[in-house]
Length: 393
Image (tube, rainbow, N blue to C red; front, side, top):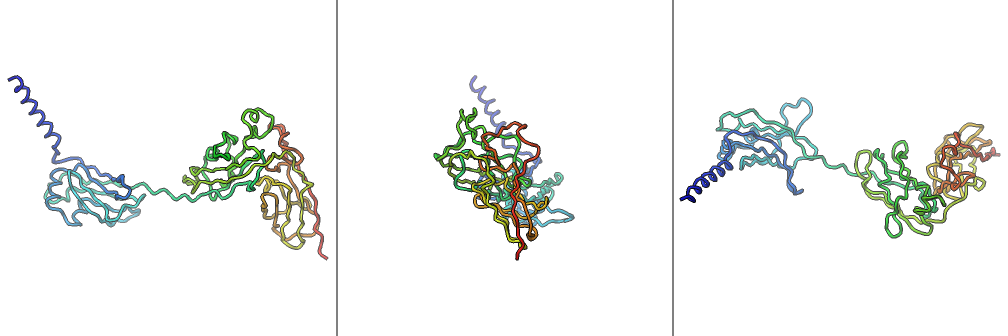
């Protein structure tokens, strides 16, 4: 008897709970949402959840025609301007379990906005029950194609000195504001990453349009005899082969990753410990009356970036303008003048900031350069190499 008394209330309570779980009120609060299935091959669709039982019954028992469905749930491309009645998107409608679903005939375009309006009063046979529900939905835009890539790395020779100082990385388009040391790797001939080969600088060394980035090898490891060099060894070791890798996750000015990962192998030769000797330069004067190039060749490769800034031509104290080119692994400098050469005396000028690949300067080796500010003069010294263009006879 006791067991029966407890059992009856339990059965009754269970029935009430089940009824409550299955109960859906006649009037509800519909919500519109855009659903993007996990399966990338499946099309996205629009759902209106919370449809009342009366509305569901009316739509299921007497499905409207195409234009009738559109009056109930209208999906159209959002337009800018005074367009009063944009064309509805064609698709299929289904109703089940309190959810009205619209699947477009053609997939929604990523990034395009669609206006959705649910009007329950347009359902025939159901009393008016509320104001229309409207919203705007959109799929995430497709990621823009990565177009930016590394075009060149300097120095571009197959062999660089053990005490190489800089690397210039050129890009096909402007890059983002963030620096790039974390995106540049140095791999040894076993494929292992060299630990901390580059100088971590807070300042970012970009050119004006952010298409060239300068990476500095840690001079503390490149200079012999000082503490970082003794503790960690040089970043590069003569006789070994290395690979410079620019990782694809470096982003350009549009926030897109690079088109591809860039790698370039190179061999390491002995350290270069000698200063630049201008007496070994060969100046090949052009013919006067022409715009033939002035050509200067060097016995060693010089710094690619500085060659465009630290060498020029003067005549009677005035700078001769023209287009400068550097090639032959940075061993040849040429200038095509803006106007034809005139007969007379000229000077090839080289500023003291000019460096070779190892940071050696004119008349001074990198090994003896101090990093203290007092070591630098306010104005660079000038070395002048005279040459003459004789008048044609």
